[in-house]
Length: 459
Image 1: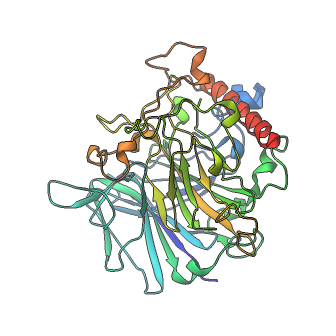
Image 2: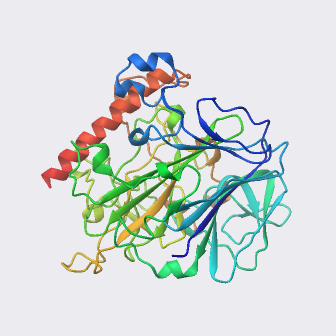
């Protein structure tokens, strides 16, 4: 089976700090990246006497998910100030190879893509120049690609075959480079225990295991649910601060679960992120995002809905939900732009009283082509996608992207109250008390899981 190649490129860094001695570490030269397996145990002494709910997220590396708190792979970038180009070792995830690369400002990374392969690039920090992706033309006449694309739209991450190298902008860049054998575009995923789903390799890849989501929360989800997770890689800058977390998901098209409908409410300031999805294998033509847009400009023709009532917060099958106002198809290699709430004057994400980036309700549609019985593929297919959970510091939207064209005029400025904020006054600065934040996110998440289970089984 041919394999996809992923590469992550990062520009600029500082002296590489030492990782804890207890971590299993692949040590490299100063211009390479350190790849480690997350150390066992907790970050703080008080964590040992705390409950499971109290421990998350404060007792674990910032950025790892609640359902996969341990055994994550950690990639730490070198200092770009002392290293022009840094490239990680390679992983293969379900046939797609994956690398992380770092470039200092103005530096270039040479591409090596054959005629039988297709390259894709997902930026994680900084900018790159003239890669034929949607971006903004700068003062020097270069098309500059950013971490985000225009809001509420989809864009291909495909690189033109004529490109021979990737050049970083004035602030350097970090990006994921994916190189895909073209033949895999004709290979649907129909099983979780066979290639290409199980084609996995690379540093510490023995810890990458496809796991049913029901195994994480057996009391909330039936074991028959074909909703799978593979976690994950935490990318850190040279100081050890969170930059991005990648995890992979699959969903069977006959389950009508739509990959979960959620809005990330209650996430603490130090754990919030900008979430972008890229599809790798598509189960159906309608695979993509569904989004509730609470404030549409043209309210005379499309009424701006109120917050979704409790009995409308479906976890499953939201294609029948009247509150879903926008769908964004995502063929393989496509990513969507920001779905989170944005301040249209400066492009910054807006936040709630907890410091969490504000989202409308959204999910990933993976279901049948139509509601007609028997409309699914035979055998039924899975959609497989990867999630980029970006640190909020890198997700500012350039204001030229916030214009009428495309769907930017639909920009969702979420301002309704959230349950996490209802019982407390809005604070201008939450401070950095991670332990208090961990209590909030744990409680919020488990309430969400309980609601999901109740609504799903009542349907």
